Length: 376
Image 1 (cartoon, rainbow, N blue to C red):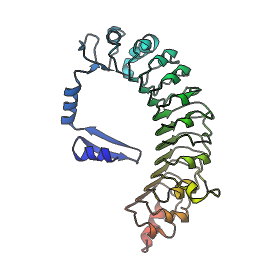
Image 2: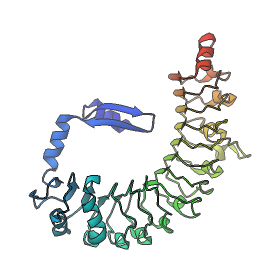
Image 3: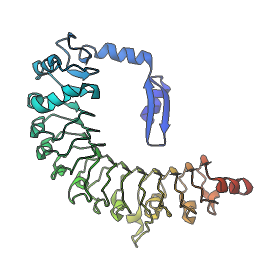
Image 4: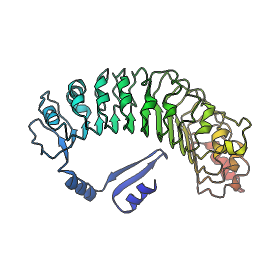
């Protein structure tokens, strides 16, 4: 966040917007964009036509709007296989992506980045395991993808693995814990229960996203292995509860829970001493949870000294906020949106001396209560 705002203040980026505390939208300033293109043009190439002449020094390729079945662009990649570092295939170039998957993967042994987003194929071949230098693999929104080979677990240098929107993916690789360098993972899977000693053993993982997992009813109970996790996002999953083991995520800073229609979050302490209760969550966002009636004491009061932002949106069954909310004295922002059953704030809100912003929107009874109560 600090880095992004610094770039904004220096006019490197513009139209900067914080989107629901989940991410940022911005565009690069035109002058910075032109400078970046000028610096990178000797190594980066956008392929837009089959007849395009490509400089021999290009190592990073993006394929855009190639509708022809001509194989000339593919030949360009193969001829540069020893120097090739990045391949990005846009969805309009599906034939290029499918050809790469079926015939060319073993040739790209020095590849660092491979993006095959929205390319329709059912099975990723085992030859993916030969790309031992791969750092970034994007397979998002391949709606026909059903299976990943176990050889993918040989990618010891892989840091970013994106599987979000792969709605037919049957299961994750059995030995995914062997991809020891993973830092950012996005998952869509048809599994009901994630295997123990799997993804929760990735000690380098910092960002973990589950979304549109239509059958996922539980998350693993044991999470002690996720010692580096900073951000956890759970969206569009039929969970009824979160595992109590979430208390072991001592470095977790951001927790987002969105559009989980059956989820309630009544999570109370179970007699732990004060040190075991201590978490470090700074941003907690819940939205579109129609079954929610309680806020999680385990997470929020466990982060009493760190929590800065609390956003509650579209939780129609939430009738009241807990009295212990007044203990969250580090809170700087509270946003309550479209929670029509809420009618008042808890006593002791004046104790929140760090509070800088209180937003109430779409909560008519709560808004009226706050207007009438001069003491708050």
